[in-house]
Image (cartoon, helix red, strand yellow):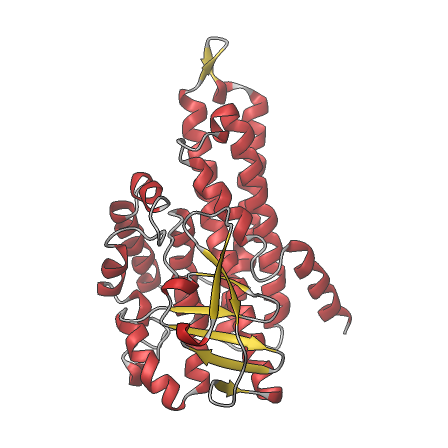
Length: 337
């Protein structure tokens, strides 16, 4: 399949990239890792002013009613700048899920989410440890075939160790009730499965941005690091490692875009396309991670050097919503079914 993003979609990517370059530079991100929340000061308000949180909220609830194809380039930029805010949780997963549920919950929460006045955390099946749970105003959680909406006061949060300083992790202990239930049975399972696919596709898009940033950082470092009388970037071994990482990353890009297309068009093969994208993007970002680690040498192991923030985000996102092995097995099962 051949397609091009629209001029508006490219303009949104450019606009978000410019905002993040200004408001979420390396220094601000490093400072955020030292705070209790892990958030970049002021970034949430700037994103809200730009209308980012309302992109996928239906127009009747104060949003723009956009789809997955409108998000994929934006999420790639979020990965490129390792944005710690729960953008994907709201625009890619939470808002579409609440819109599917409808009713009083959608009427109450979607306008708040779209305006940036509320935050959301999502926990799907098998995911008892959530990022951003402590700062969320609403938690959407799955248990079996049921999807529930709970407030922080309804759950017990226990902070966990996290390699990613921009995403505080919490174990969530909770009990479902009739009052918190949004959907159940086959309907609840289908909603949760679609939310899972949207989450995996969003993680794949962020991994593209993370991989790109790690390659760019390593290229710049290789140009300036002198060894044996010349920049290490002049050595063929370094060039080959970087070229391999770049090539693998570029080959994973079309499947990620195609997964967004399949989700937006609700194609029957959407789950297969999502698994293909997540596996390929996860593998590519991991290779970029290893290449950056080797290319930087010992300095990559230091906390003061900023590359570690992107490396650690790769370690988290390549496993979130299923790692590459999980998605290869899932794709094989879907193909053979």
